[in-house]
Length: 110
Image 1 (cartoon, one colour):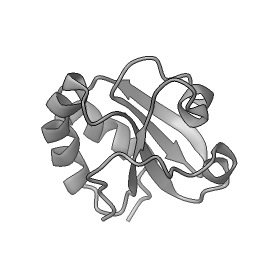
Image 2 (cartoon, one colour):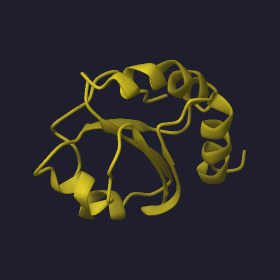
Image 3 (cartoon, helix red, strand yellow):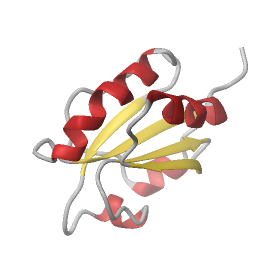
């Protein structure tokens, strides 16, 4: 499992993400955001059940091109990608069930 703990400034480019194979979850936010901190238990609980899905926490903010390319407006925003295409999106998720439902849309069949 690739469950990120910290938001990174060193995120992949949009072109790199568009070229990825398989499932990927992007989480846009910042460490000081109360909504982001409150959502972490639900996000972690859901992602732990899907160890084959990589997770990248992207630090977002003004002037950050990746967040703008995904039209992120509120934090946290989870973008669920499959082979580089957005399949689902959750803004300020507050329950593991919604996250798990989105993960089921991108996780490959066993």
